[in-house]
Length: 475
Image 1 (cartoon, rainbow, N blue to C red):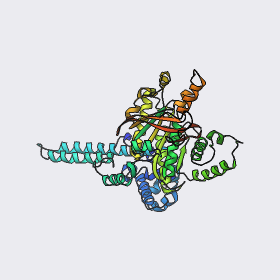
Image 2 (cartoon, rainbow, N blue to C red):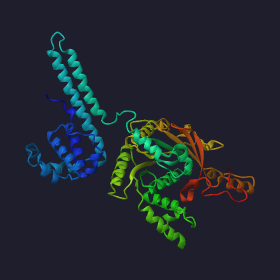
Image 3 (cartoon, helix red, strand yellow):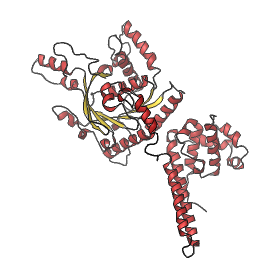
Image 4 (cartoon, rainbow, N blue to C red):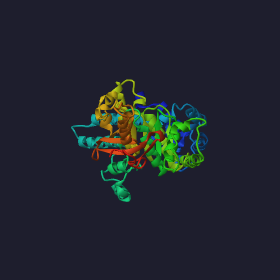
């Protein structure tokens, strides 16, 4: 039976096979594909050979595949090794391999439905006086269910499947922390760490410490063997490196090193600072934390994160670490669907990152800007309504937290007397308020942390600035 051409795409099949030849590790990202999903018989041969080689730990290349398939007449007629080299050279984008694989799978399902429809029509036409109709209906139902199961893949499971593992995980952690520990006891106590499969949105006005908070959390996670993927649309790797060093140096008994000084040539450091920086540099070089500086959409974030986790899990490009955390800085700078209204496109990106968290079973932390309405308020306290171009950001987030750094606003105030200024600045010095305004799985709350914004350091309250002096700090 001739099938409509829209039920297969040889270009998509070639794109998948070419991507696999370029990077065998992509095979595990498209493991939902089966040999039968390919329409072209030669592509079926190639994918089957690719699968067997990669699963056995061998290299799948045009040379090794040619050796395995050289006896196949169909492969030789298609061009043999030259055909493999052709599809390898014409790969449109490695990062899109999963998308092309999904096209191949969906077109297979469409062909299966088309074939089934023809079979049902033929069988119904041959039925006389209603004999065998019930059997035909049962058989049709069974085959439709098989096609549906292929579409669902491994996503439908018993509610309690894997629950033994979850319970063991809950029992194995102290203080109830079952997620990724942040190193900040106030957050870990309230939220039990950052939970796998959840989207946490941290939103604030500029200068409040969004990047400082997430970089400090990533530093702690990476130091504890958790692979972190940071999609930094705003900052360069050098800026992030400087913040990491400055943050870690804050734990040493030496004079503070502001991260901006690490970005300048000829900055002065005393001997103690130099020694500490060299020690910290050696530690930072081994961190399982990778940075993607590119402006990205959800698919590119996903591709980069998969690559990070895949390579760090194997230890092939960096220290070996288990998949753990994705951070995107920040939402409004992500590429958007130009066909959608701005607020809807932002909401779509938030929804895509939530889906990514569930798919990879890792926490995703998404930074977001707030609109200017906050500045018009006396107390500067943000609310959910302040999410800039909010769309459905809060709808997709499991946790929404707002940052407020009172010192930022107090430094810009006019005071009646210098004494009033000294008193207020002492009270708000280094205070970072994290306002949990939405928490699907727990209570909302307001947490108080310490922040040394110039050193990118965030700690539990009282660690960086113990109460001291005439005025001290506000409780």
